[in-house]
Image (cartoon, rainbow, N blue to C red):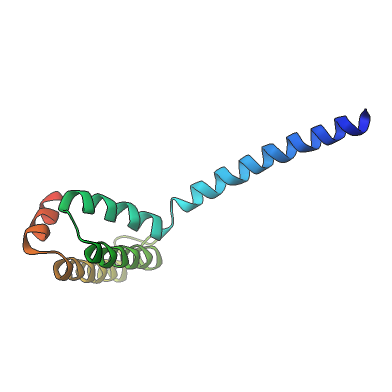
Length: 114
């Protein structure tokens, strides 16, 4: 009887710890550049009726933008000349990618929605 009670208690503790670990990983996954990029591309796909090729290209552009922002801008002094220059460069690269990928009508709609 003691052995059975010990096994049930152990299983209960194991179940609770597994649930805690899985909830922590979900929180961490929401912050990854790929997840952020995917959600932004989904919004744009619905708004602008993007093709599959456009969606893939924009996904790559959003991932690159997120990675560069995290590496060069986030957590640093926003008034620093280096940070301002890096932000401007990243935004220009992203804007150029958007302009190349989207049609003129889609690009204008995207600019208005920002």
